[in-house]
Image (cartoon, rainbow, N blue to C red; front, side, top):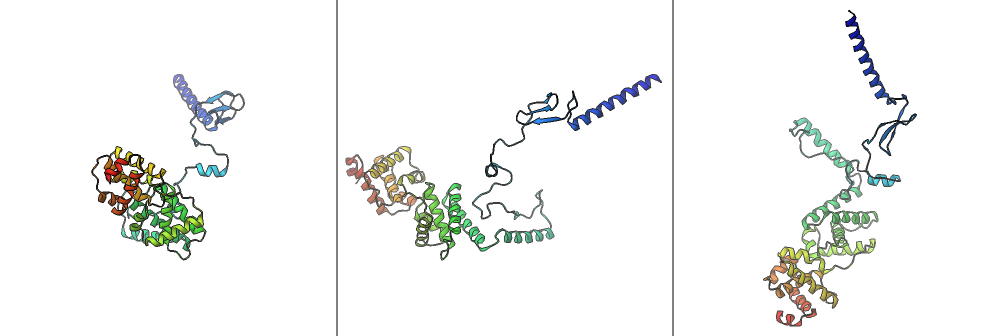
Amino acid sequence: MSQQSETLRETGGEQRQTTETQVRDDERVCPECEAALVVDEAHGETVCEACGLVVEEDEIDHGPEWRAFDSNERAEKSRVGAPTTKLLHDEGLSSVIDWQDRDAKGRTIDGSKRRKLQRLRTWDERFRSKNAQERNLKQALGEIDRMSSALGLPENVRETASVVYRRALEDDLLRGRSIEAMATASLYAAARQASVPRSLDEFEPVSRVGRKEFSRAYRYIVRELGLAIEPANPLEYLPRFASDLDMDGETTTRARALLEEGMESGVHSGKSPVGLAAAALYAASILEGEKITQKEVCSVSDVSEVTVRNRYTELLEAGTDPDAARGAA
């Protein structure tokens, strides 16, 4: 009987000890003096505020790895939520309802829920563009994205084009001009600013308006917004044309040297940079013995063969090797 009582006392003592430990852990008290504990986030420690005992150390910092000193900086560095983008008229802050009529597990939903989702999509689309200005911006950004994909322009050019169009819309520059023309002009200006140039001839097939209309819109945007756009450099067209023609590195280097010598001599003044780049590649292919015809060069650069013949002769004459110029001519 005494042995059984002793066993019960030991079991009860262990249960009380476990309960006291759980209460102590829940209350976060010091195991020595039972004072309150404080968390020192700067040192990653939990210490007693009375006796200074370090209860925990090397704690994991669950906060961000960056520092911010004001609300604006904190808002810019925070990565909570979906990223904002200028490529959407609402900057990606609105809701998006998927067009697929499937649930989270990929199963097809029934007819009543499909009809409900369709009504939700309709109202969501209406709420995303609340006024005429947002509808205008939505259509223009769609045009910019379509043309950028067709021309193979990178995302930074699309972002710049959307910012240029937003500025034009805010300054009320679209009155009396079509959305397509202003969107094309904004994309052309953005490509020039980002040193990823595309010629007007390349924009003409992908734009929904004529070349004359979006050229006029481009000059208007540059003048009214005060965009700092330097004249197109023929050297910027060389890598793309050489890649399309599958030229080797030596020929491309020779073409770059011809262009640089021609620009030092002033050959590029008043000339089309696209035509000069195409002529430099054709002249370099002749000097390097690479078999490339004028027709192949014109097909990738979208210039006439007459332009290539005139420009490549001028580049060779402006070079440092007159004998090679006479032989090529």
